[in-house]
Length: 413
Image 1 (cartoon, helix red, strand yellow):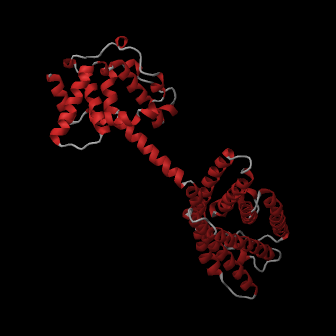
Image 2 (spheres, helix red, strand yellow):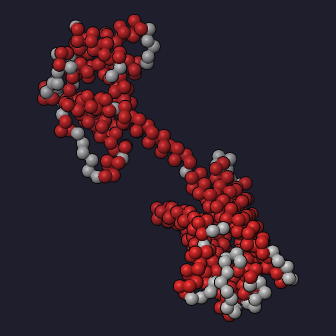
């Protein structure tokens, strides 16, 4: 496992950390205690994987002039990660007060293990620099450092094994309506199991070294591969969970955004046709955020179209309205068209708008002052909600061949 894999895993965890901090900042006060252990897991896991990268480890050791200091950092951050995983699971499973009381035991236990590891590393003899996976077996028979390796590997194995069992149990207890949450928890359990296998291989290699055996190939070639797979799978499972819990809202957001974008484009022909009524009414976005928001742009497009229609007021000419309706009815009867009433009304309104904009129709672009007051101020305020579907249907009918044909008939009269 090279630098790219370690640093890549660290960056993936860092992205997850940034997301969890964003969630923590916006979470209610009663939910913050349950989110803090997750942030702590991501933070310590990030440094654990970062210092495990050979290129980072070499530079840290040389900068501090302490051989294998990066190995100690990996051991301490890894122990902290396992501790916070235990706390995270407690907060998931128990109420906040009980979880905090139960969390004191992991804090004391793993804190004591980390303190003992630091003492053993300090009092141990100086040894040449080794990689993270080379160090346990290389110092297996070295006084103090051999005990350091056993305590580290055993502590991690107990914590990760317990966490894997709990994740699998939580996955089985997940309600039937949340399949992706169950899959995410199962994926994390698989990743933790692989990390546990890596630790057991290293621990076996240390014990075998005591008796003169050699499992160097397993500890330096097989174990890193399993460790990398476990880390990647674990991060993947942790990424699935927030997506799974928000899958419905994400799908609704995507569908709403698609509908908004589709309607905004559908209204373009009608908006361009009416813009000449009063170009000064075109809204100019005040901020970049408003310009980038497709919902805000659709809202203002509907407001502008309605305002232009109020100024145009083709409905004030009852003779024109009757002529257009008769032409639409005649066309539908002639073609045997079974379109809905909404589609027919949209076609009528589209032809009326085109007739009002057509110089030869006799209506022209009427001065707004001669049209009287708008029907209701409420209509403008609620335009986005009440008029969107009607205007979209009208815009789609505006440039159809049926509108062309009926407009020709009306103009000829």
